[in-house]
Length: 374
Image 1 (cartoon, rainbow, N blue to C red):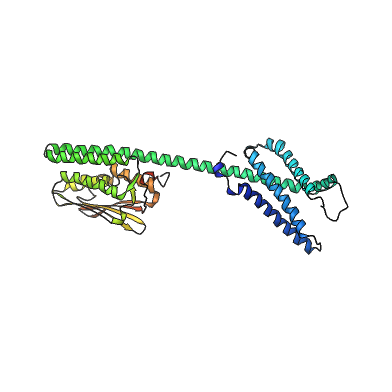
Image 2 (spheres, rainbow, N blue to C red; image 1 turned 90 degrees about the vertical axis):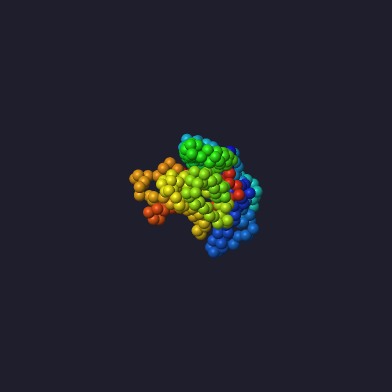
């Protein structure tokens, strides 16, 4: 069997399958032996168990060979094939099993006059043909069921792979959307500085090159360590510090035990950028931008708090590209296990809170999305 080989149940291993068949035969033998004793018949236990065990040993071997060489055909058989091929085969197999049994156990049946091989064979075939055919068709249905199981598993695996590919494609598209947006806004900031503070613009350009290098080093990694994300955001805060020199107090606070937790790449930058554009830029002085990360049970809680003008003046409460991007990526990565909230603490303070499942990994680059579809 080549089709769906990786999904074959363990019990189809020949040793397990044949041993299980013999065990079934012994259980049947024990049941019948007990019944006969209760009815007053006394038969020698060894020959009784040997004969039953041998019958099911032969059937186990024959059925496994049937699976090994005709398994694919059985799984694809049409009604016509079943009637014209497998029905005659079930009769031939049943007779062949009886021929071997009669040849091995020449002293059976017990308490009968001496009979020739063909006489004994005729008696056994007449008495047990239907029972033997039932065993054949039970095996046939088992193999058909395994075929359905294999196809189901293969379809599920293909579906899962397609969902992962779709999710990664969506995440890649979101990052492609985010990076130009970030680059455009940063270059715009540098351009405005060129007219008022060339040295600050030059420093900001160097910091941008460092950010781009970090972004390129991450490659296509969708999840990165919180340490890397904070390194990135501190560089970005340094750039904003050049633009808002002396006007903003910036703080970043993180529990050291959380540095190796995983977070979506470029999770914080759009939030911080949004805080500057819609909040801090509206103030003349004493601006505040605080980033904190802490553990909350089995969750990672990240907060970004900024001063400004609150949420009310914003048009219809709609969120920009960056924030919508984050919500979409969180949904793709974590489904309903992650939350994203924006709240107005007072008229001049806004806080963004993200709650993620606490997740650690030493192989960041190979981490895939947990959820295939939104």
